[in-house]
Length: 460
Ligand code: COI
Image (tube, rainbow, N blue to C red):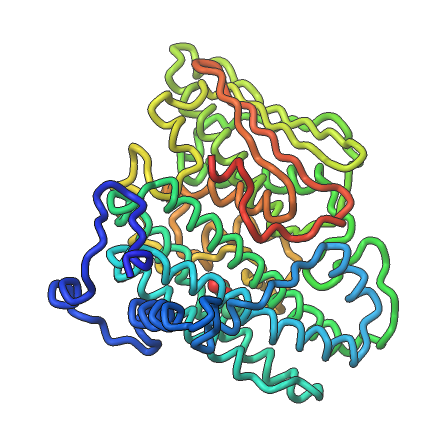
C-alpha cells in the first residue's frame, strides 16, 4: 500500500489509510475515491496467484490500451478528401481514443501522494476527468451522420466544461509545491497538459471536419487547395505572417497595460521570410505571442529606467527565421536586460518560483482558461463564427476572462509544452544585464507524431 502513497518529497510520508481517513473527511465523490481504487487494485494484484498483473476495474482495462498518436500530415491526408465514411471513422477514432488518453492521466492522478490528490483543485479535475472518461467509453459505435451529430454535441460540452482545468491544475500544483518534489510535480503537470492538448486537438479536429462536411459549400471527396485549413491544420503556415500578427497584437496589449504614451519596441523580422510549414495556427500564436509579450515588456521596463528614455526609442526586438531541411527555427532576441538571477532556476516550473504566492492569487481570478484556443471562436461584426481568425488577442481578453496584465507564470512552461507536443523545442539563453534570446524549433514537414510523453529537457 505504501506504493500508492509513493513519497516523492521529503515532507510527505506514507500513512496508514485508517489514520488518513480519520484526519481528512472523505469528499463526496461521483467516481470511486482514487485511494479506494488503488487499494483494490493493489490488493487484487497481491492476490493474483501467478503473480502477473490482471485488470480489476474498467479503468485498468483502458489504462492497458496504448494511445495511437497521429501526425499533422496524417490529419491532413485524412481530412483532405472528406467523405461520409471518413467522417464516421474519424468519429470512432476520437470515441475510442479519448477514453484511453484520459484513463492514462486518471491513473497518474491516482498515483500522486494522497495529500496531493485530495487537494480540492486537483480533486475537481479528477472528477471532471472521471466523468468524461465514463461518458466517452460508454458512447456506442457511431454508424450514421445522426450518431455523429450527437457525438459532436457531447464533445462540445466536454470541451467547454474542461475550460476550468488549467487554472485548477495550476492552483493545485502551486498549493502542493511543498508536499512533493517540485520536479515530480512539474513532470506530472507537463504530462497532463500535453495529454490535454492532444485530446483537444483530436476532438476539435473532428468537430472541424464535421463542420466542413455540413457546410452547404462542401462537396464530398473534393480536394482542398494548398492555402486552406484541413480541419484545424493550417497547411501552409508562414512564420513571418504569424510573427507579424502576434507583434501587432502584443503592441496593442502593451499600450493598453502600460498606457498609450508608452514607447513600444519595434519588432523586426528577417531571415527566411518565405518559410512555411503545416501547423495548428493557435498553437504557434500562443508560443510566439507569449515570447513576444515577455520581450516587449522587458524592453519597455528597462527602457523606462534609462535617464534619456524620453528622447530615444527603445531598442527593437529582432526576430530571425531560419529554414533548415527538417526544421524551422525562430529566434527572438531582445535587449530587455536578461532574466533576473533568482528567477532563472524556475523558468520552466509550474510548481515553484519566487512569485508563487502572487501567481496563486492571480490564478484565483481566472475561472476559465483556454489551452489550445481553437475554442476561441471569434465572431465577426455580423456575428458569424470566424474560426480561422487570429485568436491571440481574443485569447487574452475574452474567453480566458484574464486581465491582460495579470501574470500567471504559466506562459513559458506552457509554451514549451506546446512546442514539444509537435516534436519541436523551446529554449532560452539569458545574457545577464543585456537581454534574452529565445529559440523556438518547429518540425517543418509535419511528419512527426504528437509527443505524448515528455522529453529529457522537461524532466531536467
Ligand atoms: C480537456 O480539455 O481536458 C479534455 O480532456 C477535453 C476532452 C474531454 C474533449
